[in-house]
Each structure stands twice: as structure tokens, then as C-alpha cells.
Length: 267
Ligand SMILES: [Zn+2]
Image (cartoon, rainbow, N blue to C red; front, side, top):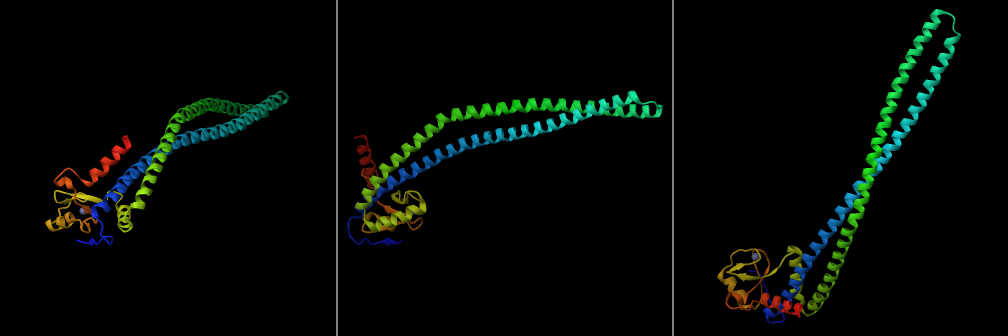
């Protein structure tokens, strides 16, 4: 089992007690950052929904502009057709030859048919425009009500994030104080392990098992940890092990640390 001879020869349990306090603060901080990320994700979701609605409104507006252009062109074409038919009618009265008259009648009939078609298509376009304008109205209302209702939610989230930041600041101050008192060498090891695992890295032995990786230890390992003459690492997960007195009595270092803080907080 790899171990680390403490240079200060101080009581290992005492050294670890300070770092265990830091560890509990770090666990709180990790939890806080997780909560903060969740809140930020909620904000992103709200913004995505608003973004979608804004996009729908814009797309519908563009569609309507395009539709109006098509209608304008169709109206102009219909006007031209109507003028053309009027010209043909005028011409018809001055024609004397039968075959010319027939040809003109034929052309008039064709133009008339074209006009009917154009009128029908325009009528369809007007219906479509009314429809699209209704859709646009709905999209706009939906965007407006979503923006309105999400304001309350967004403010709530901002407040929660701000509370998280405040809590984080307090934790950081407490931590900074403890770090000053901590054995620098052991603290460096602790931080390196924490960065790797993002979890508790100083753990008690429970039932001759590392409570970090839950792998059984040998009696020799357990003895080493119990003697607490040096820092002992779990050879399976590299966590620092300590002997919790609760294995025999009710005085576990971790519990003591936690209990102390709980009393502090409620005081
Ligand atoms: Zn382990």
C-alpha cells in the first residue's frame, strides 16, 4: 500500500480533520455548482422557447410579405386582362368580315376563361392571406404571453442564482480560512485527488472496506490506517483512508466535523 510519511510528524488524524472540514465544504460547493448549472439550464430553455416563437413570428411575417407581393402582381395581371377584354369588345363592334369576327370571338372567349381563372386564383390567395394573418396573430399573442409569464420565472431563477452565489462566497471564505490552517503537503494531495474524482477523497474504513470504492482491505492495511502514523492511500482507488472511531465508539472524525458545523450553523 503506498503511503506518505508526514514530515511534521503531527497527528495524522488532526491533519486530516482540517482537510475533512475542507472536504465537506467542497462537497457543498460541488452541489451548489450543480444546482447553479440546473438553474442556468432552465434559463436556456426559456430563452430557447422564446427564440423559437420569435423565429415563427418572423418567418410568418416574411411569408405574408411574399404573399402580398404575389397578390399585387396577380391583381395587375387581372387588370391587364380586363383591359385586353375591353379592347377586344371595342374592336368587335367595328369588324365587318365574318371570319375576323369569329376569330375575335374565339380570342374573347379564351381571354374570358383566363380572367375567370385569374379571379379564382386571386380569391384563393386572399383566403390564404387571411389565414396566414390569423396565424401570425396567434404566434404574436403566444410570444407575448410567453414573454410575460416567463418574466416571473426568470426573476425567480435569477434570485436563486444570486442566492447560490452568496452561499458559495460564504463557503469559499470558510474554506480559505481552513486552507491556511491545513497541512500544505497533505492539502495538495487532497486537491489533486479531488480534481480527479469530484467526490470525497478522504474516506473512513467501514467493515474493513474502503468506503470510497467499497473494495475489501487486508487486516495489515487496516492496521496501518488505524495506527495513523502516516497518510495511507487505498491501493484500489487512491483515496486517503482514515480510521473512524465509530467502528468501536461514537467519535468518528467525519461525524465530529459535521456535528461541529451543524452546531455552528444553527447557533
Ligand atoms: Zn478505495
